[in-house]
Structure formats: C-alpha cells, structure tokens
Length: 255
Image (cartoon, rainbow, N blue to C red; front, side, top):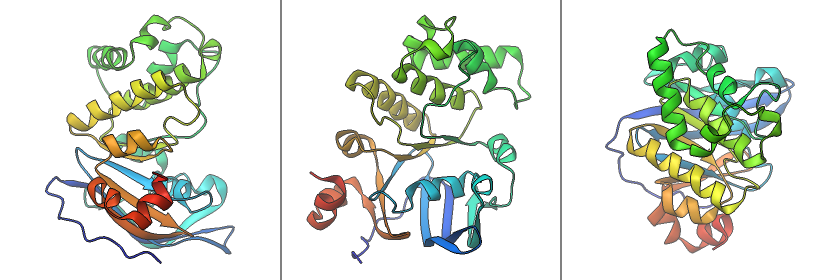
C-alpha cells in the first residue's frame, strides 16, 4: 500500500464525508473495503485509480444508486452537511442538493435539448422565473446548448449530449455535483468547455467530485486527489502533493 499523504485541514465547509464504508454486491461480493474521503464546499476533488479499483462504485454509493444493481453499503457512513444520508432514496438526495452525472451521456433522445434541461427542474418547488434564470445560467455555461435548444437531443453530438447531461444536473440546483468520466472520449474543445464550467461552479462555491482521465485538467483544476486501489483508499493529497510524489504521480497520473 502507498503511504497516505498528510494534508492540511480544509478551511472551507465540508459538504460530504464518507467514513470507512464497505460495499457488497449480491450479498457476497465485497467491492469497497473501508473507503473514506471528504469533499469541501468550493472545491474539486478527483477520484483516481485503475479500472476495477472501485471508483464508480464509490460514486454510486454516495448518490444512493447501488440498490438498482443489488449493491449496498454494509458498514460505515455517508454524511452530507452532517446528516447521515445513505438510507435516503436518490430523489430525496437530489432534493437536498446532491446530483450525479453518470457515465454514458444519458439524455431523453426524443425530447429537445431545452425539454431535457427542464426535466432537471421537475422535482423542484421553484417559480417559473427561478427556473428560467437557471436555464439561462446553463446556456451561459454552454452556449452551444442554446444554439441547439430546439433540436432533438438524439440528433446532437456526443459532446453536446454530455453538456446536456451536466446542464440537466445543474437545473436541479445542486450543491454537490458528482461526475463519472466527465470528459471521456470528447473532443479537446468540448473538454475545455466542460472543465471551464466546473471551474466556474467551484468559484461559485459548489462542491465537485469527479472521475476523469484528462490529466492536464486534473492537475490544473482539481484541488485534492483521492487514490483508490482494490477497493481501498491508498493515498489522499493536494495537487501540489501528488505532483511532488513520484510513485503516486507516475502510477496514477501517468505524467
């Protein structure tokens, strides 16, 4: 196991605390073996590790999406703003401000871009004025979506669909955004637009937990890195610390 780095106390409010969780699938398959991490308000935390390390399972545990795959958190706790939330249904967690953008650019292909975005506000008890303001905010983040707002989502590009998935998540009015493979397989310009959006969200005080293979972006935008290997956290530290730790940098950032 790699030695975990000693990190400075995070001065910002910690929105999410994952404390020593274990996850089991089908009542017998142990996938996570004591994972702990925290995500501060106004920060980007990157989850690193190889294929099969447990990164996606960690995100699904946080977003309470395990049950649909016969998985469950059997030990430890997940707290959001101090409240234990691992037993909430996903829709209740969304109402509290936690939303996940899953890998795969999911959208309602038969709906227009704008109709897709508006589905993100479905669970909110907000005025039409507030929803319109958030819609304009998404179009400000992603002008390309505004240009395609009347187009059927199924006829947009893969990059536009990923923007749409993120935009729909933002329409829920979240405080913690969880992204699985945020820019995987996208063109460089699209990746840049998405990371620019995440950077703005960070500046506005939102918390972001992300899996991504874009090393340049991770070292430029992420504040903290959590390395998972074989279902365990083996290293945690800041970007400066990971770049100064060759055995971690070379193995997990490949730079």
